Length: 243
Image 1 (cartoon, helix red, strand yellow):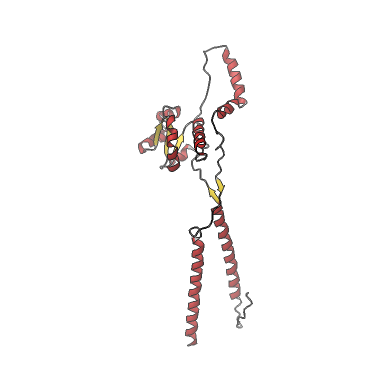
Image 2: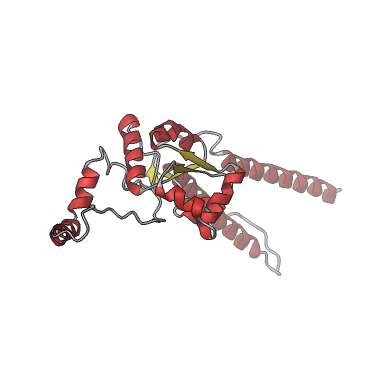
């Protein structure tokens, strides 16, 4: 293959060049594959979002759940006798259930970053807490799970059998269907949409270091060592055969 002068017997040693060609092809493929995987790993960083449902949080024994003190959700947990809310109540014995007033949510945000803590509350409250953190730091360190575990109905209270009720219902329904309530609700939160779509993959630029390329150096050193060992064995065997 390298146009070397190789002596061949009648039986033929053509398979030597075939083996050499296959080895070079395999080496090139593995090298390109390793290079591509290494660059992809260094250039793209994955941001995991493992907790999307209450079940995900409950099943992880390392997560501490924070609930709103004197809120409707925690009351449903305390009244539960079965189901996942009952499992949440049982986790209090393991020290995984933390009940705090709303005003103390900002004080635990650093613990949410450094530890496994999940705030479970109405989406308006969690969104306001996340937006406030973004306003102070400029970072999107938090995400909101996809599951809604409890409905949060909002209504206006009026006197029973009041003639104003049909008119109020019609206008509230029209306003809700037009999306005005959600619009006004979100506009009342500063930077409410800043972290709505946090990317799960980000591209970074970083230089290679010896720590990142240790596998490549190990393969290179190992190949050179095996080649040197093979050469030494061939020299020794050639000397033995001559004698």
